[in-house]
Amino acid sequence: MAVRIRLRRMGTHKKPFYRLVVADSRSPRNGRFIDMIGTYDPLKKPAGIQVDPAKALDWLKKGAIPSDTVKSILSKAGVMKQHAGAK
Image 1 (tube, rainbow, N blue to C red):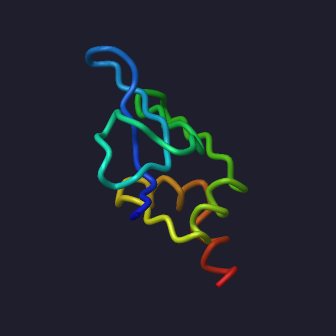
Image 2 (cartoon, helix red, strand yellow):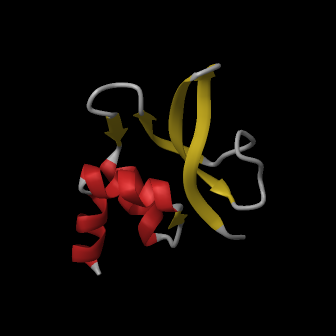
Image 3 (tube, helix red, strand yellow):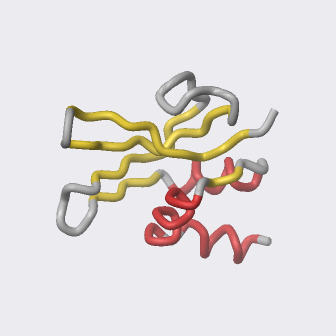
């Protein structure tokens, strides 16, 4: 089973809000997920990012692959730097 860290779209029409979730790569974008590790609000200035670094690092160590957008968000939160330092 390939596990990915990706965004799950929430919010209303033209007011997106995203959750960072760990999900099986075969499940749909807004479908079943395993764990929620944070949120991302692109409408705030600057963009609102809340990530649980302990959960994110744990899933990255287990081999979860972040999407390109999530990798950027985790880099801004400082999680990717910690993950690279732990290797």
